[in-house]
Amino acid sequence: MTCAESVQRGDSSLAGSLVEEMQALLARVNTSCGIGKVAGYFIDALSRRLLGLGWAPVSACENEVLYHHFYEACPYLKFAHFTANQAILEAFDGHDCVHVVDFNLMHGLQWPALIQALALRAGGPPQLRLTGIGPPSPDGRDTLREIGLRLAELARSVNVRFAFRGVAASRLEDVKPWMLQVSPTEAVAVNSIMQLHKLLGSDPNRDPPIGSVLPWIRSLNPKIMTVVEQEANHNQPGFLDRFTEALYYYSTVFDSLEAACPVQPDKALAEMYLQREICNIVGCEGAARVERHEPLDKWRARLGRAGFRPLHLGSNAFKQASMLLTLFSAEGYSVEENEGCLTLGWHSRPLIAASAWQAVPSVVNSPPAGVINHDDNNNQL
Image (tube, rainbow, N blue to C red; front, side):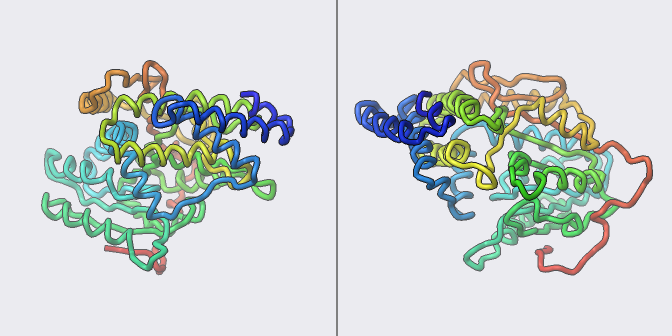
């Protein structure tokens, strides 16, 4: 904490000597688990900040591997997927042609469960379109298409009519609504799992991208937008406040991971996934700092101003999330209802929050911005 205070004051000489002192202390602490490991990650992040190294970005492929292990190691991403899927399933009730726009496809881990649930729908499954956004493949492989083919094979096996479209984009703000080829005859769901906070970036030459992205999402007139975000306040301008919040937040996350994940490879790689977040929050500023988590109350206010109204996540979503926790042996996890939203926490501290939203109809009914078809280089299956 003293080191973080000296960083905020701009006393890099004192901060540097404190980092050296802490690194010496770490030699006498067990850094393989618990608070020793968390301390090691925060000391490393402070050191990187002082040396101007910032965040060492990993490739899209490496990021997907770490994401997958984080998914397996603890219930946070599973909770996000289960809760969003239940809300989307209920929003699609009675619609024969449905379209999901996923802001971060990754391995497509979220969608087999939804495809199978739609297959069992009373009256038969709808026609499902999935548009998956993800980074371009650096090695020439068409990773998005490969994921789409696997999902198409699953859909075929359970008799769900399915079409996939991959949209390659390094940043969400680079996506334009026409790329999504939304049709006015479709019920649209927009799915954002821990993505919107990356649009809060600070650049003195332009406004944060969230200000342009939310209006075009609204222009699609989605039946539902599912949003899952870290329940934390890591976007404060003051470094010390941000550092303190992050220290307590990630101490709790690592505590839960220690209790929930006996499988060593999953746990080690899940910790690397979290270490990258810590490094970015503590070690970076300006446009380089993308992990700008904000709590649910701030998202409520922001989405309300942008023309969205909240949809209550019903009792089915709560039951699904509670059942999910029975798969994990640790007893410290808890699901709580918060004014129609759900949070997943560890020993009463909420760590991620799931919410659902609907676009408030405009006074003038104009066609959605993504209706017009354009020829482009994106994938269509």
